[in-house]
Length: 199
Length: 286
Image 1 (cartoon, rainbow over the protein chains, first blue to last red):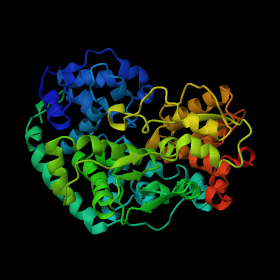
Image 2: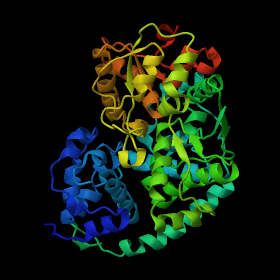
Image 3: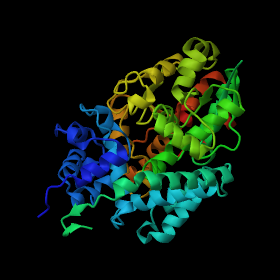
C-alpha cells in the first residue's frame, strides 16, 4: 500500500510554483478536459494523486502524456491552479526519474520535437516524422496516404529552413545549465511509490 | 503606413504555407508593412514548456529582444495561435525579476517586456480595424454561414493571452461579418482539436474533430474559419478518416481567416493558396 507523503506535492511545487493542496476536488477541470474520456485518470484525480504523494498513479499515468495543453483546466480552476503546468511538471519528473511509460507515444514525439528545433533552430517537420517512423514501429503505417497527399499539395517542406543556429545552441546550453542548478533542490526530494519506498 | 515586425513560425513555412502567403497578401493590400524578424527561431512550442520552462520563456524573449533592439519596433504580428500563446507567456513570465534574470543569461541580453504581440484575429479586428477592413472589401461574401473557430491558444490561459472573453470570444465573428459572412452561434468555438496529438493518438484527434465539425454543421455552418495551423490541419485532414468509417459524413471546408479576408479584399488566387486544402474549398470561396 502506498504511504501518504508530501514529497511529490513539494517537488511539483518547487518545479512549477503551483500548490496542489489548493485543489478541493470540484472536478471542473475534469469536466472540461477534452482528453479525459480517453485517459486512465482525469485531471482532478491527478491532482489528488499529487496531494497524497501517489507517485505511481500521477507520474506513471497515461493522462500526463495525453494532455494536449489546451489550458481549459487552468482557465476554469476556481482555485487558480495552473493544472496544465502541473501536468508539464509531472512530465519533467517522469523524465528525470527515468520512468516515462513506454506505451505513451506522445512522450516520444515531444522528445523528437524538442531535439529537432534545438538542432535546426526551427522545427523540421519531415525529420520529426521520419525519426518517429524509424524509432516507433507502431507508427510505420500511420497516415502514410495523407502524408503523400500533403506532399503533393506542397504542404510539406522537404528541406529544413534554419534559424540562427549558433544562437539557438548557445541558448539551449545556457538554459540546460541554469535549469540543472535550479531543479537540483527539487530533484533531491525522494519520491515514494507503490513499488517499495524511495527510488 | 503602419509597420510591424513579423514572426511567421515553423508551421507557416511548412504545413501552413497558405496561412503565410494569404496573411502577407492581405497585409500588403491593407497597407500594413511587415518586416520579418531576421534569423527567427522556433518559439519552442509544447515541447519546450513540457521539457525546460526557462528555454520556453527565453526563445520568444530572444525574438522580441530583436524586435525591440535590432529592428526598433514595438509590435510583432504572430499569426500562428500556438506561437502567439508562447510569446504572450514570455511577456507574462518576464515580469518576475528572477525569471527575467535567467532569461537574460540565456538570451545574452535583457528582455523585460514592451513588445505587443498581435494575433491573426486582432490583426484585422484592431490593427487594421473593422472600419478600414470594411472599406477595403471589394468582393463581399453573400451571407456565407461561417463558424468562427478560435480553438485553445488564442484564448487560454486568459491571464497570459489577455483575452477579454475566453469562453465566448466574438472578435473573429465581427471580422467575418464585415466580409459579408453570417457567423453562426455554435458550441465548440474554443474547444481543443487535439493539436499535435494528431501525430500519434489518431483516435483521440479524430473523435475531437468529429465533434467540432459535426456541431458546426448542425448549427448551419457552410464553412469553419480558423486562426491556427494545428486546428486547420487537424480539422481539414481528419475528415477523411471520419468518412472512411461513416459514409453519410458530409465534409465541411476549413479555411484560414486570412484566406477569407483575402478573398473579400481581392488578394490573388496564388497567394490565397486555396488548392492546398484536403476538403475542397472552391465552392464556398468562388
